[in-house]
Image 1 (cartoon, helix red, strand yellow):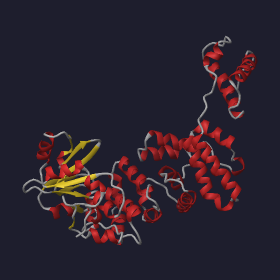
Image 2 (cartoon, helix red, strand yellow):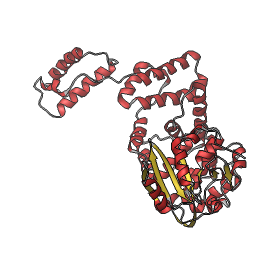
Image 3 (cartoon, helix red, strand yellow):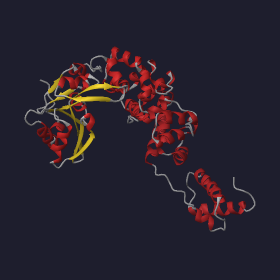
Image 4 (spheres, one colour):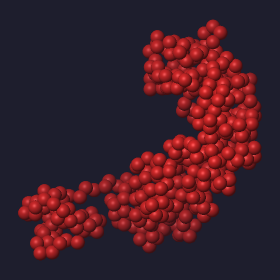
Length: 421
């Protein structure tokens, strides 16, 4: 009998208490999904989901009499969330999906554990663990997990028609957990049904793309998606050259010991060189505002080998932000390190470290400094400050406040007759 009882998270006092409350009399409750899967793969467990024969209204009644916070997260689908000590547990009543439209489902609650397992997406996600930690497998998930194979439960095409997001989840799980070749039935069904991706919310699509790019090596999954036309269905213009560059970046991450950065990988995978194309992609994927502006800033400068210096990178940092400079340098180094000598590689790596720890200086001058010289409030003050700031940046931020005041006097004297450009 396969068991997960030895894992530390399974011995959590709150979890033990929850399972004891949910396993009274004829009622039965088991941990299901990612927690079981990850434990069997010796991976960290983040979220704990519990499946139960108890109806959601009864679950709420049980825990309302305890110190747990109770939230009816998705009560129409049988899900109740309970929280204690900053830990949350999702408890869902066993169910079967009666009607689906590719995004939503009408459900009926049941006491049939196999029926509950059959409505799930992949075999490795339909593994249950009872109160004693014994793993229960109704769909062959243990064997697929052993072989690192991602398979839909039952008919792959039918599973996808129930929820088109499962197409992207298929590639995401293959990227994170798959090994060897992709399941041909799942791949064929995903490609056949790819037009259904258009009915999904852009937020859900972006979240899945981001999770795919968070995998240790998502390259094979991305190649299958590219060759199957998946990216075109979600408005992403991926090129063969982009995948080649992504491969080099993933190799660079390993060579230089960098942490995985999905945004860096996204920039390489989806080369966005024009402002309008970035705005279009951001709108179609409903990218968070900060990512949209980050991508727009990325087209503001390019790394040129002969201009890589700590002074120049600090200037870019001041103008565009730390993360952009670090990402641009990492991309440059990943794509070019094989053609650089050891000294140049060490130089660029040191610049990256310096930029990661450099504190952006504050421009010393303020509007009040200009007003003191009799310049009236208005656009002219901004022009004068902008000119002085540019000179300060050119000095590698070395001009002191006194130096800048001296410069300010010269600029104001000059501006009495001519505008500062």
